Image (cartoon, rainbow, N blue to C red; front, side, top):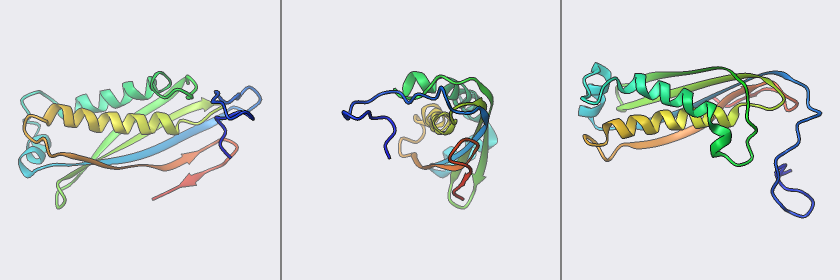
Length: 156
């Protein structure tokens, strides 16, 4: 059932007034693939523009907080926690970003976590595009969510 459309087929924001507040957590992941030189420089922290992963982490957290400004039907949420981490996959020349977003409220944080991981990866691209315009952002996905009426979800 599509919940963002009324009986006439018109878009609207879902009314969460009657929903119970619960602790909600969403974990998302995504990957950016790049050439060997770019990968090494990010890993070594020698990109001329600065601390790529540090700035990417901050951008992802900021994006999570602004999700309702970007996605039309998202409710503004009080985010109680947001974290971005990175994993280097040397064999594939991939940096995997993981976003974990938390709240205690009436609606989930899946969109906030997806926005966070996407923005984090886009920031890596932005900071390194002068070296490698062929970078590819892929496999952005919801890996886990907890809380709410629909219960827990895992996709690993």
